[in-house]
Image 1 (cartoon, rainbow, N blue to C red):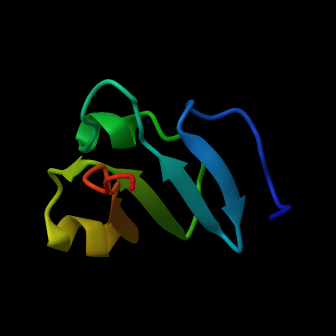
Image 2 (image 1 turned 135 degrees about the horizontal axis):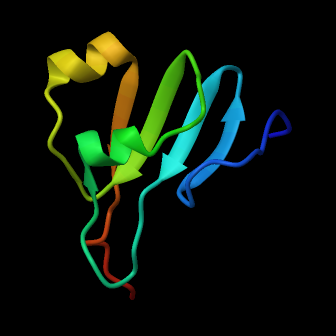
Length: 79
């Protein structure tokens, strides 16, 4: 992945093929994809892939804004 890594919020991973990737993760607390999180995004892209524990946005809103939510799998146990 080599496209653009510039100043954005601390959860910004990278932008590739006009898709911006964010990993909204905190080790000691549950994270949420909501309007507050979206307001901190500085990267303009055609599509956004955002990882978080929970999502409070409606499917209609996410479709309109080209946002894909990916749930962080915290419930995976180690063997």
